[in-house]
Image (tube, rainbow, N blue to C red; front, top):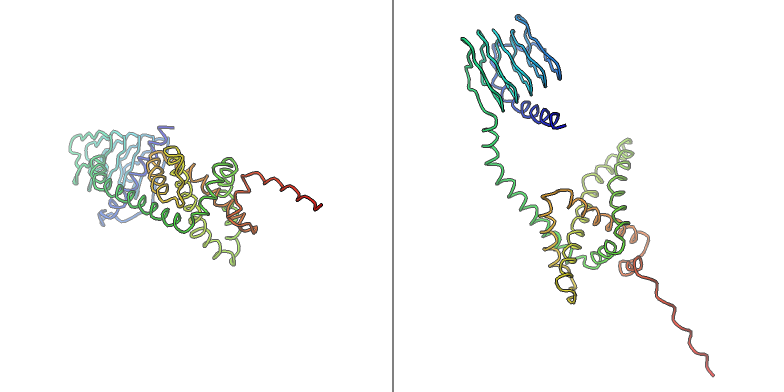
Length: 317
């Protein structure tokens, strides 16, 4: 499994490098339309043969002809008297034998390049690892800023929900607290069921606009609302453990605390996803109850026992 994952990752990196490689290709080598892709096998390009691209994963590659772009991943590459525009080697030992010419760059990652005789690389031998490290050095702060921006936006949205829908949020929290299994199951069903609904709508021309509205507007909106409800519930749970006697009319503080906790939990993405399923299920259950004509005020009837009947009034004497 690790080998397959490494090969897939390396192949993805190699293919990403094909774009600048093709853009920099020598126009004197006209395309032939011939592409060779192989896995778990040996490949030989004899002298006189010519390919636009050769991509091999986990094999031994012998090139004696002309190839515009050679991409090898976790393999062995031997080029003798060959001509190539660009070579990409991922975890692959490369031997450039006599008479071999690489007209542009040779990209390598965890690879040893050996040049014999008059073999030459007219471009540069570039280490992909150092290039990726340089890219990561600039992208990492950007990703952090984007993450912080999304977290702040989620907190702002939670505060808005707490201000405009405090009663609805409290009702949803009651469902999570007293019916956790049911809310979780409904949340899972709410993820799976729309897939079949959308598949049915996309079949017909009339249903396509509705399907697009559900897919890009309604479904993400309800899911995000469930995420916010889950965060507020977590915040209220923490506040209740810290100060059980204080009753807050609107969950402003719980919104901030809960959404920050969910953001920190994103280190393990499965944790906020599970929490969001509870909130998503609670929102769906509350929406279904409202659709049936029951108000939010009596949502506690789902969890509380029915009141005992009042005793009959005494008969007049």
